[in-house]
Length: 534
Image (cartoon, rainbow, N blue to C red; front, side, top):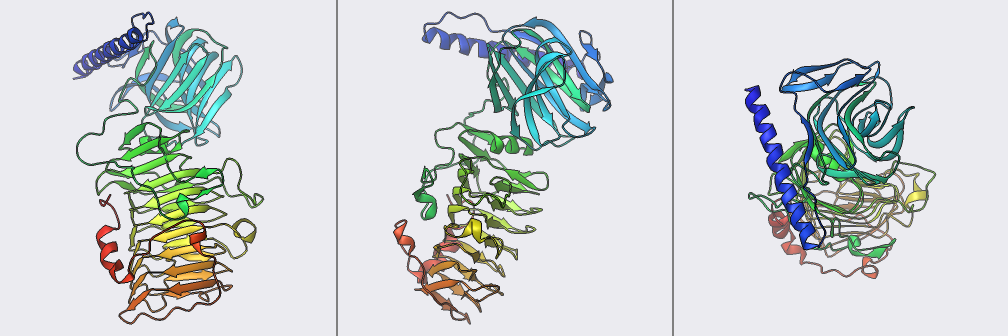
C-alpha cells in the first residue's frame, strides 16, 4: 500500500508540474516572453522508509508513521534543522507540517528555502506565539522579516509553501498567501525543514521552480452544491461614507477561496488584502476568538455552513488609551449566510473603532457570551436579517457604563429585519451610541426586555413587530438612563408599552431607508431572516 501511495504521489506531482509548466509556457508565449521548461526540482514523501539525502543538525530525526510515513523531529530541547537537495536559485518549497509540541515561547516549526547551510537560510514558520513568521538566519538566531497572525494548533496538519524568486519572498499557509517581503541576502541554496525547540512531523516535501500554489488554487471555481453570493449592498450605517471608507464592500476586487477546514478558514480570514471566503459545511474551530482582517467577505455555501466551537473577532486588541479611530482600525468586512453554534466566548465581536461591518442573514444560537457584540468606539455597522435564538445575552452595543471616552459620538449601528426569537435580553442593550436605529425587526417572547437604551444612548425604535414582549423598549432598564423614541411599532399578545423619553438624532441625516409596514414585518422576517435566503 505504501509503495502504491508513493508511486501515486510521484505521478500526481509529475502531472501537476507538467500541467503548470504548460500553462506557464503558454502565458509567456502570449506575452511574447521566451520560456524555459518548469520543473519539479526535488520531492520526498518518505514512503521509501528512509531519509537518505537529508543532512541534519540538532534534534532527533526519524521516519515514522503518522497516518502515512513522515519525517519526524521528536525533540523539543534543540534547535533542529535538516536540509536536502542540490541547491537552486528560484525555488518554491512546499511541505505538509504538523506541529506537535513547543518548548518555551516564541518557538516555531518551519520549511526552509535557499539554505546555504543549516545555519543560513530563509524560513516560513508556524509559531506558538499565534503567528506565521517569514524570516532568515545568517549564522545566529532566527530573525523575523514579516509576520501575520494565525491560530497554530499542535496536532493539526498545515501546508506551508515558501517561494523565493529573485529578491521576492512569499509565504503561503494552506494555499493562501499570508506574508511577503523583499530580501536579497541569499541568492540560492537547498531546501530544508526545522523545529526551533519544537517537535513536528513533515511530509510531501516538494520543490519546484514555478510560483503559485501547486495544490488547489486560491481562486477555484465553486463546485456544485450551493452558491456563495456576495452580491448586494447594506442598508443603514454600513452604507455611509465616513472614516475614509465609502460603504462596505468586503473582499470586492480580491480573489475567491473556498474553505472547509479550520486551518484553511483561520488562515484565510487572517491574511492581508481583499478576499472573498466561501465556507462549505460546518467547521469546528479551536476555542476562542479568531481575528478577521480588513477587506473580507465571508459567506456560507447553502443553508448549513458555518462555524462551531469559537467565534470571529473584528478589531485590534483592547486599549483604553486609544480614544479616537486609529489609522489601522479593522474595517470593511461582510459576514453573511453563516451558522454560528457553540462559541466559547462571543460568536461575533466587533471592537476598537472597527468600522463598516455588515452582518447579514446569519443564524446564531447556543453561544457562551454575546452573539453579536459591538463595542469600544466601533461604528458604521449594519446588523440585518439575522435569526437569533436559543440564547440569553444576544447583542450588546457598548460594553461598560464608564467607557464614554471611546464610545460617545460613535457606536452608530443599524439593526433591521432581525428575528429576535425568544431571546430574553440584549436585543440589543445599548450604551452611549447615537443614533442607534432599530427598525422592522420581529420580536417574540423576549422575557426580560427587548431594546434597552441606557448610558445616554440615543435609540430610534420604529416599525417593529413585538409579540408577547412585556417590556419592548426601555431607557430605564438598568444603570444610567438613555434616550429613546419609539414610533410606528406593533404590540400584540400582551406586549407592554414603550418606556421612552427624550429626543434622538434622526438616522435619515446619515442615510436613506424605506420603512416597511410593521403589520407585515412578522411574515417578512420569519420568511426571509437567517441562512439559505440570499
